[in-house]
Amino acid sequence: MNDKKKVLEKFLKDNRVLIVDKNPGSRNRLIKIICDLGAKLKYVHATSRFAEAVEIVETEKISLILSDYFVEGGSGFDLFKILRGKKPENKNMCFVLVTSNISQTAVAKAAEEDVDSFIVKPYTIEAIQEYLMEAVFEKVQPSEYSIKIDQAKNLMMEGELEKALLVLRDAVASSKKPALALFYIGQIEYMRNMTSKAQQAYDEGLSYNRIHFKCLFGLYDLYMREKKHKNAYKVAKRITKYFPANPERLTQVIRLAIQTENFQDMQNYYEVFTTLEERPPILTNYIGAGLYVSGKHFIKHDKYEEAIRCFESIAVSCSESTKLIRGIITVLCESNHATDAEKFLQRFSSGSRDQEDYLVCEYLVWAGRGAGLPFLVKNGLELYNKNIRDVFCMKTLVKAMEQSGYKQEKIDEFRNEINILWPEEPAV
Image (cartoon, rainbow, N blue to C red):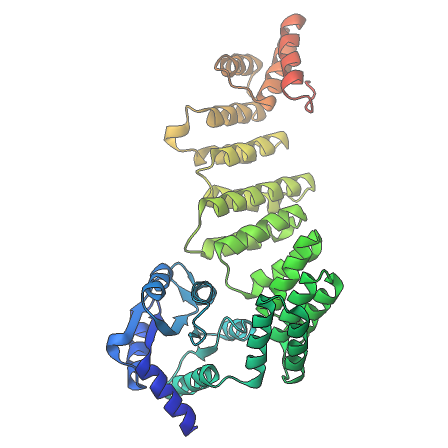
């Protein structure tokens, strides 16, 4: 124990530290504890933001990073992954995740190689010292298992796959929980086009840790490359359940959920979406499209309450997309729910109410609410003369003209145009 304590004291004295925590009180407390354990205050950096943490590591030679599970702009878990990628040459960089509950601790354990250790809140200076001693000592004097993993990775980089496999099999034999070694075995087998053996290695790794991050992602990538999308989705769903979401990963799982028709899960992904501090436009587009397609599916299968939940979620988070709101109103009017469709008209901003999407929706709601034939013909022709072409509006116009006794040749002009513009939508 004394040897480990001395190693930690020297490590803290000689190296720079970064603390990432969005809570000022927690941040200051960690700074004090780290300095009490031997770090020099002038070499301790602190921030609350994900992006700033990345900048600090790029400009300062940081060797120890302690990050809370959730930080401004992302998660400590994702921060570690990015920083390892940016500084692969710094083998002694130590990453410690600060967790507050059992599920977060499970993530830290499952993120082998991306997280060196974890600290559980509430913590004491003695507890932090214990966690850091173990993590730093492993960096300074790595175990036989860790040494073999590094040897194998170097051999893989050099293209010596057979030699790397031998080293990894020795590593498996030297550890009680060799999930990481099995992940790299899976990587090698896949590189050698041995897909079934790769899958077997990932599955065996998951038998030691059922949410091992790298094994899950190895399995996911394998299924995606093999175009086994249903299997890939099952793995992606597990990743989303256990690991903190980020915009890129959530975009991928939403796309896969739509592709595999797992519409029942879309509301869960929407709830994850609402927790993200950063929501780039592409993710907002995907969640909106996913909810819309799911809502249409539920309408078709007489699950109206589920459909309305999807549509209301779009209205809350994607109301700037007038195309989506137009789609919702169209679906509701087509399924004889014009009263509910009318509520969504309120989601259009006042500045958009002279534009096509609103005008089309307003006309469809009028038709669905039983507006008179003269009204529908007059306003339908006004839309047409404004060069607005919408299949449902034009079909409504044709029907109203027919019931109003217009000449057949005039009606046929509109009917023919519908057949030309939308051959898959036969005119009434």
